[in-house]
Length: 486
Image 1 (spheres, helix red, strand yellow):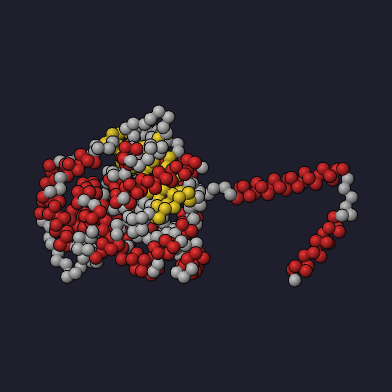
Image 2 (cartoon, helix red, strand yellow; image 1 turned 45 degrees about the vertical axis):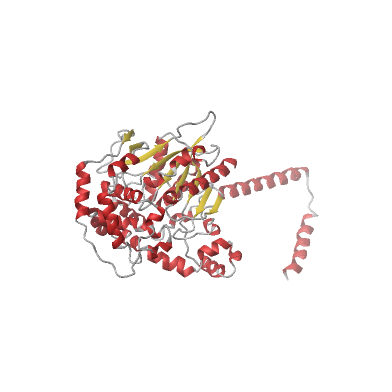
């Protein structure tokens, strides 16, 4: 019916226009009016596209009241990790008092950390692990402290040892998560700062790398006040980069690092040249996603899934419900009453090691659940794993690191409030096959509007830089090359 009425309506309009006797004045006014209306329309369209950002705000997380403006210490101070005979003797005494708990037959890692394998770890830790040697390893990169918003922020800053004349060096901020630390990046740093030396490329993409410790983790001071979340962290890390003299920089993160760097891109997009992630937080609720999830199992192409997406995403209940429930028990504790369990872990090095190292088993490869040793030594050395544990132990930071969950989840239980603010900076995503959850590119685009690269990584899991440094470094470089060509 509308097709029949349309010509008649058009004829009526034209019949009213034709008899109009244009004067010379009207001949001028009409184009001017049209130009004005067009200009208003263009302004409206452009203003509608204005990038929405997260308010940067400000904060004070130190003890007591904030000092008067201009009185805060903004110096950057060299820092060196140290240990002592007393610290090591205390650790050994506690390890000597380890009380073994027998596991059920055939437990493997289904009940958590296998206690028989834990006994082996404790024996190695007590008799072979050399903390003094590992402190030397940690100190091979330059460490610093600087005070921001009342708390001391720890970071390492590694520059290339040699830069050819005319070569641009790109600043890259890399942020860890839980239960990791800045140490996760020790194997990838030389690949990024001296790629040609390690056979990665001809040196066309070279970085200087800044790896801060999240406040409350390792050698960064914990907040003395409540509600310290990823937004506060993002703001502090922007201030850190600004204090180091950078106006534009690249960001990279996984786990909490993904959340923090995403918030940084949402907060000050003009400062972020590119954002590279190896984990994406995306809301999966809603009728639309539910329908797409159901259809994707049968016709993945219809909902924008690739074959690889379908392989990693289905069976849906097993991979996105049962597996996630099994691996997220810690999250519910840390998001509600972290201090209860945390105080016990802070008092027991064995408990701390079991709690942390268990994540490096099944978050690295889900099949490791079936192994008596959790598959840990197939991907990492005990020295590497225990060094990460020691960073939590010597700094007594396990409780404050666990509180980070409560501060974030109490405000945003689904961690997707900020999904309403699109990420418009160039984004690269490295999707590792053993990551806890898989987010297809078509879903990631709901938040990350400018995905430049999305790579299905051939192997690897949650701790990408720690487990597969070369793969991750190559993907970061590929991403940066494409951004620089835009």
